[in-house]
Length: 637
Ligand code: C2E
Ligand code: CA
Ligand code: CA
Image (cartoon, helix red, strand yellow):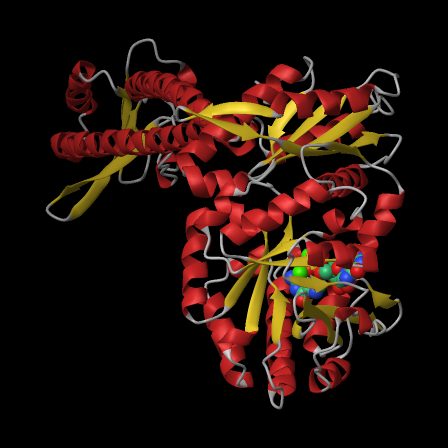
């Protein structure tokens, strides 16, 4: 679907019109100025010649005037015949009476009598009327009379007309050339403008309409009265783990993948639907729907399927999936902002649902999204105000029943909503930089508390702190850990960092490097929730780990089922030299089975719920070599 119009761009059109009018006006003004100048100067030179001629006549008739000889004077005037511009010449005597008159042949009576003494006194500079000049006739300083000469402007007019036609012709030529140049310029400008418009509306990498073009089209389709209420689906598509692909295979591969995704999307949608790249690894599809209720669902499902397949990037086959959220117009929203926000909310839900899935917008999601946004804000304030707390869940050694460690678990008591589970607010924090602030805060608090409870302990009780992916990505992470240790005075041997499997897989090389540094400082590393992620045992060898925590979900089914897998995990961990911790031990039967299966450490509600720092301190002080079965479970703080 082409979103770009082919009409002549408006800028070029108006520019062309303005230009041509400008040139015409300029030519007109300069033509008028030139013609006026020409008329004035032609008249001025005719006047000069006429004056000269009048002066010559005055000299030649002076004797005739003295003697009153009209014939002689008439003869002098007859010489004027050879001068075609002289219309008439009159000689007046000293009493201003006409003494003699010459008039060219064919001149009318009115014109013959034009040359009077009065007519001389109104000289004109710009006119095509006859030029009338006079010259006094004198002899030895005595005034004898006056010569009045009338010169016709016929010749001057002819000359002027020639000049005017020349200027007109030249101007017409100039206009033609200007028009030609402008037409060429206009077409070039047109091209440039169209290209600019194309660039402004197209994503150069995939050649798809870009974000701006997409949302303009969405606005148009929803606003257009002809189509209004014609159902549409807005589908937002986010390539899962695109950053990992970009980081591990390089930007070239990332770009290639985006192009392949664009092509796959274009193939999947129907003609008339719009595919656009609206952000880094985010695509959008605008699909028009028939009145069938399930059509948007099948469109979204088709897209998931089209993208959930291996793509060949730089000769390598890479498995790619995408998360999809969609919202329908007009059923879910009847304006663009609401439609987009709904699709976004659905996309967020898809990503949280374990990715590689399409989620339809549902109205209850708005409330969830609002709560999430509010909690994020409140959590930021809570971290700043020390409104969080940390509780500690004890861990006991199976063989001896001794308290060997405690896991630090953050708690948030919200001023209005009461206690909020970390299962809810940790993912919110992980969506932003909040997790870094929160994690650093917990780390410092846990180190401080552990240093306190270890002060008088007979054997050290370590503290385990949960670390999120984003925290590990911070360049200051190692430094932050060392600062927390130094500040608290806790021995690095008493600190365990818990990381999850998926985190390890994200950026193997960098994470391995980081872990080595941390291990070198004496801090221990534990792999949390083991068995829920990639469940690949072989990669454990690559990481410098100390401990493995079997996920609660495996322990839950013990001892009825799941025995073989837990046995396998324990023996494999032991063969790598790892300590095994079983999480979520709730029943004595589970404990008994784990002890029997050579599990090293247990943690769960049976042996101790998460408790306050004061409570764990008491437990550490009362450290006795008591059998596990006798340990009274403490209440959740
Ligand atoms: P996790 O790291 O797997 O922590 C263990 C969770 O299991 C805790 O839930 C604990 O209270 C719960 N638990 C312990 N024993 C039992 C049992 O016998 N039965 C059952 N059903 N549950 C048991 P909690 O405290 O709600 O924490 C949930 C998750 O929140 C944690 O899972 C961890 O992933 C995250 N979390 C908690 N505190 C922090 C923190 O400071 N930083 C980070 N990054 N994540 C944290
Ligand atoms: Ca943990
Ligand atoms: Ca865990």
